[in-house]
Image (cartoon, rainbow, N blue to C red; front, side, top):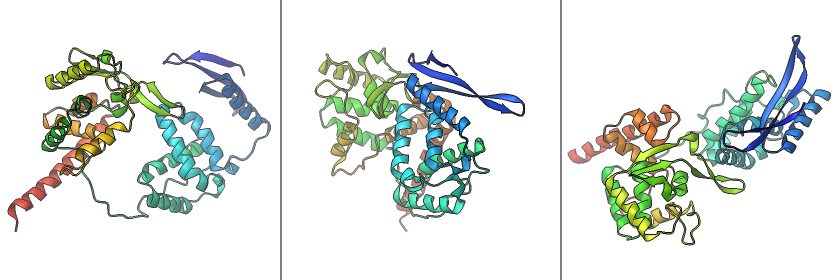
Length: 359
């Protein structure tokens, strides 16, 4: 049961162990775990396994919180720190206070359906959060702690809401109008920021992490992102390790060159006034200021990725080309955006026709 240190792909040191836990069907069984940040963490996990061997308890008597803590050890190694942080924060606020103390043997599909309905009343991201709850129960079913996942039959049909669908991107004309408003600010930093968002489709975290050394020969090298974690903001590889080199149009390059001339001593392309990292809340604040009391409605900062995607699709690029440009690990994500944009475009055609006929 020796704990060993090893190097991860990102160069950091982690710890692992392989522990003998007995025989099953005449074959030796081992528990292998890795990814521990400290030797103490690995030792604590090893101690828990030994305790379970020495004092076995029926797994169905576990509480959801105990199951969740076990599942987290696996989940933490599958996602980036920022995703892990958001997930744990959502569970601690909306899930564990309600069902954390309930034993696995006491859960029923009906009780979980009621819990799902309550989430829908309170949260916009209820569907996604309950999907994570279902994954926790999947872990229990996979390891035979329970016979079946009680969350599988739960649906989102318990609550029916009429939601007004809002467009989550600017079309070509709207983007032109918005950029005209940005240019009226005469603030080169704002002009460059929204130009980059709309004409590259990069994520906000990738944008804020950009350094001048990443801009060369009319390209942007996307190789890192600022990510939020429990200890603050940190620099990590892009989401899904989507390193990519993006080509820039001539006007965007001229705007970036002017920004660099204005702030020649800066390291990052977008910095705060004191030379530190630009606050992640700044782009949204600027957007609301620019569109305040104007005809054009503000969209989310992330929606500039959809805006860029719509421009790429209009220009005739293939799904694979758009996938690379946006840094999607899965083509399905790109296809979902394409479906969203084309669906809205079709709906808009119908309304435009009705307005034109006017009878």
